[in-house]
Length: 399
Image (cartoon, rainbow, N blue to C red; front, side):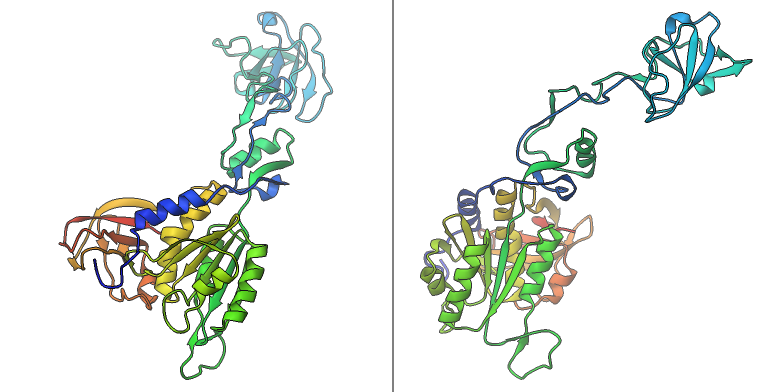
């Protein structure tokens, strides 16, 4: 075991603990128009037949099939949304358009390309016409009382349209979480201000908010605090009372100004784990207070994003029932890499569709390489060397 690794756990253990301690958020009812991308919380049964009436599938003429071979006069027309001809008179046809109600007494639609009207009488030029052609029967898409969309379905744009077509205007869904981001550090200053010696521009809240927005999570509060136990305790207490998940960056290690662990204790957060055998992001902390999840993330920007993608994303997936975890692939690596045994490395990578490249700037304080990366390269704790051409596991970042 490497120095300083006492009581640390492996990444897979951490992920298992996160999965065990994260749960689906209670359902809420939202307007259908605001449900896109979310997960349906309960089965939906069709409140009516779709179509609700016999409906023409083509532009043409509605006829009674039994009248084929007899003179058929054209008695008028029926457009979608009208009901001028609710009953078809014997020996007649009605000019009809796609989506229009087929009159009672008609059972077939002959398409306009295979018919013509001469002196007011319909001439049919389709020797393959069958009874019922081009008529959409009631319930042929979905029948009243049957399962229209099951619990767990993603509300994609077609699913939204399908539900709207049944007259449904609101749905029960698994919501996205309310997220609080707490950024700590005496050294931080806001972008857009004049640089001060000894200070750095705060970037973690910007990166975290951006990736949350990318996941269509919008209910985000951002707090900033100096390295002060009282201030941090007050802020964390407020955040825990208003959020489903809290992300605090900085102060999670063992330095004189690292107060995150103490502050979480002050606020009643139950520790699940602290420190993972990985680089970057070793000192990550995970806990919960009742149903609110708390992540203490390192302060270095690359560590923050690595821990978000590898661990926070898993919690968000459990909370929302959405598929959010990074896609994994086994691909060749373009260059050799060495590391110590006993610790997993997560490297920024650029996957070109064939192999993965390791850009310069892998240190945890550097975001320039992360800004060009499209994946994380996972080198497991058991390995000390990867040679060029060997396959490695990559985790593709969201686009």
